[in-house]
Amino acid sequence: MIILEDVHYAYDGVYPALRGVSLQIDDGESVAIMGTNGAGKTTLIKHLNGLLRPDRGRVFIDGVDTSTMSVAELSRIVGLVWQNPDHQLFLESVEKEVIFGLKNLGFSDEEARERCDVTLRDLGIEHLAQRSPFTLSGGERKRVTLACVLATEPRVLALDEPTIGQDALQKARLGAMLQAMNASGRTVIVVTHDVEFAVENFNRTIAMADGRIVADGPTRSVLSNDRVIEQCSLSPPQMTLTARALNRLFPDVPTRLAFVEEVESQIVRLLGGGE
Amino acid sequence: MALIEWHDFSFKYLGTESLALNKINLSIEAGEYVVITGPSGCGKTTLCRTINALVPQFHRGYIAGDVIVDSKNTREHSVAEMATTVGLVFQNPANQLVTLNVMRELAFGPENLGVPPDEIRERVEELISLFGLEDLRDKHPHEMSGGEQQRVALAATLALRPKILVADEPTSNLDPQSAEQILRFVADLNRQGMTVVLVEHRLDLVARDATRIVLMNEGSVVADGPPREVLTMDICRKIGVGVPKAVELYLRLAKRGIRLREVPLTSDEVARLVQEVVSAV
Image (cartoon, rainbow over all chains, first blue to last red):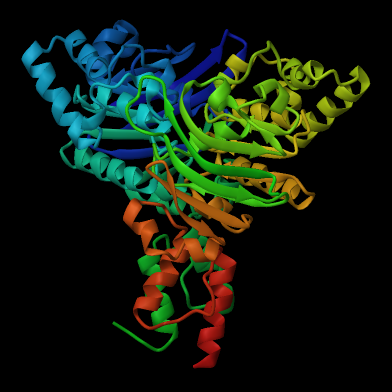
């Protein structure tokens, strides 16, 4: 369980990024963190593995105040995938990148090799194993950083904008993989601007603006709340907007729809068909 | 002659084994808004780099065929020479920001082109207000968030007043409203005559503004046409292109025998087209 208690943080002590954030994330939850650029989303997740320490307030992981724990200790619990893959990659092959992290966490050569193979296969990048990360496309590099962290099987997985540069297939595969990890009891936390990705894969959404939490609840309700949308520079999923547009013409169409299938069945109903 | 032309163009990066671009034949006319899309690693970014001559002048490798931009063969012109014609916004904004604050970043390009100081000042102020960069004016690019960097990189590119704007996923780091704002702005520039070539995975954001979608796969162009045509092609599903949900809805309805008069790209279009069908019953 993760608890943040009134966390404040300012870069260089002068640029405030978090202005009093309190939240609780239970084991096995799946949470999207969304909101305005510069709202403090990245700053927030960097507090989870101790890369940043609060100026004021406290962070607890499993009841332990993280100020007493090192980044190395925290990394065994919380795996963090950074937004910019270039800040995370430095070795000459994809395989070496993945194995490096595993060996650092104390895995044997054999075990590290096996986990590496499995993870690359799961992410559909086994054919890139011998390639230098620097010859890969942006989307591919992003998946390599993901592999490095997934291979360590952390109990809490925190990802910063994992969908950037990913095509629809990769995105669907990533979503399925995160759901599977979540179903196996891991906590999955993702920072994302992608409303469709959030609504399809995460039950809970925390919306932020200006260093504070503006809303925290079921993804569907957060993403259909106009006040929150406005304040956090979000936009509703296209099918929620479609449901609203239909509702203006046909008042009995509910406005809180989020998926194509839901809108489809409303249209079928409007045309007198039923299932 | 078109503004940008690829003639049987192929390219392979030094040290790699497969072609990044494989016999590209494509032409883009002045004033078009072309969205380039396709699976990750399909050659979109490389294609962008051929327009301002980064390929082959900076990125070396095997090359065949020609790219002619504004009547200049990119084999014979440096990236600097192409800079007044083509402005390229990189996928990763941090790789293109070079100075210590936003003011200097925006002035850097025009200064290098020898634009008079008064005009530079004017352009910089205009872009700062257009992109809402007032608060970032003195901030170091590396202290900015990813989304802020992306806005600055685009503004700095536009400060050169290029004929052609090439943008490689220019909104990938932006929150939905900022992304929409930037894309509205790009669409405005296009309406005012700027040729736009934009790489994007999230087609729901750009389909309504684009005049054309070019679909790439494994280094080749596999589909090319107006958005409503390309997005309903089977190949989109086959190679994993994310069509807008409105198009998905259209296709699902069609399968049930419910035909909307045209392919909708936005929520309002869906509502309008559904109303037509309902009132016809």
